[in-house]
Picture 1 (cartoon, rainbow over the protein chains, first blue to last red):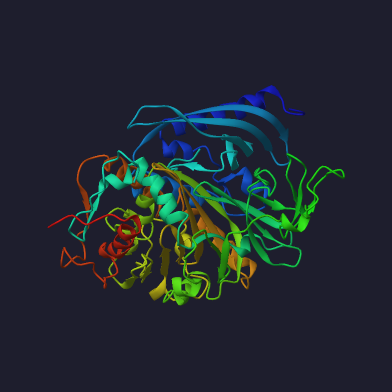
Picture 2: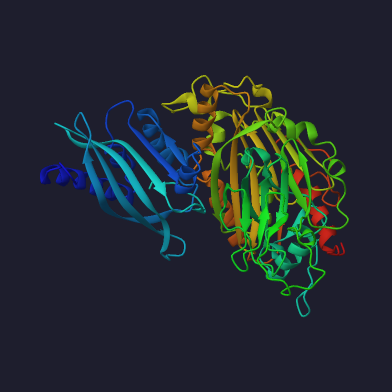
Length: 164
Length: 394
């Protein structure tokens, strides 16, 4: 965490906590609100297998803010009522943080998502991997400029409706 | 049929399928032998997945592990992924690039053509007649069509061109016109459903299920379907677009940029039993499905660009395919969810019934409208015959 003071880390950790709390509450607008207003703000979810093979296809490729807004529409409008719902719990552990230029921080965070389908109530490990984030800190607080989820899990369990 | 199991009685009506067959483990085991290890061609990859000399990938067909290589002469090979000595699985990585494959058990070494090029031994260790030439990696029969790599384990499988009779043009169309492709990547999913549940529904899409389809006015009935008595199906859908693409902020998801005709905007070919290739707008993919258990099916969506695409078009294909299709795709996420529920519901008595497009309940239909579900019925008749199930009395 070289060159990053405690006050900055506190804001970064609060952002990450807000992110996972929004997802676990299925609050898609809350999820969107953790991202920068910048037009280039992005959320990409891909697999470690694809990254190591240098393959660009991703599970989710929301590479601009318009697509982030559309992600909210997919989940809350287009897919509403047509998939068997599930509950998630996200657990995160920051492992590295360094300052880039222009108030940006590069943050690496391990994550684990436990998934409980409503229909059987049995918890299962859904996905593990790492968040590779670029976080901006402005007078409006901390926001993700980009969030890249690299899943160790190469095979999606059934389907993925919510971001992770 | 295993001894002591109840016989499967097939309904007399041609539009009925017994739900039993989706959930019985004895049926699953029998299917592996009669279908997947029988006289069918199974698509295992496209050669664009292994473009360079030494590239390889591994897959399983049923429980049979295969190793697919591009050898040092640039040729494609499919081997059983099992050492010619004691049968150990030779390669475990899903893909990579190697000049040779080493079995860790006794250090037997195979080149990319499957020839045994090393096997440590001292004089007197092996029988005098031992010759390395007699111990290559064994191969199943293989064929290539527009770069698709297919294998068969059966002894009486027809030649590939007979097997695919009438389908070549549609396969080519789904694969960019000529099958000269560039790999973009994979989306992989485990479905908690029987393989037939997936295969029966992977190209036929209930329009009512897909809110996105309605939003885009797809499934409007424009286009056509073909189905033949080998159980292969072709679906061609005309895509029409509303003036504004609904509520989306980024319309690039639904743009045609490759110059293909929206009247043939959606082209899917599904080969019995489980292979698929699709083109939806500018997204080209093959679907490799593999039955892992009676209630577990793994599917790999493998996406491609055309070899002649410029980088801008490649980028568009990546952005479209990633978000449109697969287990998180805008128009397909709910597929996996419905497969699971279809499977769960199959644990109840009775038959699944096909209605849309059926005119005579006792006759297997041969012509279909674009959005009929009856096009699955020739494939079910093929399945029934392969499995040796007798039809019940009317």
